[in-house]
Length: 157
Image (cartoon, rainbow, N blue to C red):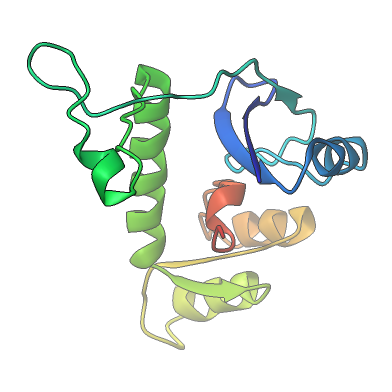
């Protein structure tokens, strides 16, 4: 398994797991590798180095305990400020999406029904075409277009 660092043109950095270098190249060449935040497929591979770590004592020497147990020591990878902001942004979006009903492509009809008092008002989200959004605005129904990050549209595996 190959784990590589990737970046999109918007400087969103993320990790990709591939069966081999050939698999990585094939997926990148066919546009199947996309940024989980913005969906951009113009992704580049970043230079990376393997992380080699060992449990150390206060003097900086290996304790040998991990080797005795046959386990690898845990290696902490530092989190950059950008990665921290991305994680906070995704956390915020997940909390927003958890509080609204996803009505899918019925968004315009559900918004109308709420506006005219046919159903109880609630927070909804969904998809609407430009003509539908314009028609809603003409009827005095305010909507806000917020693109949902690709990473939140389906579960990451």
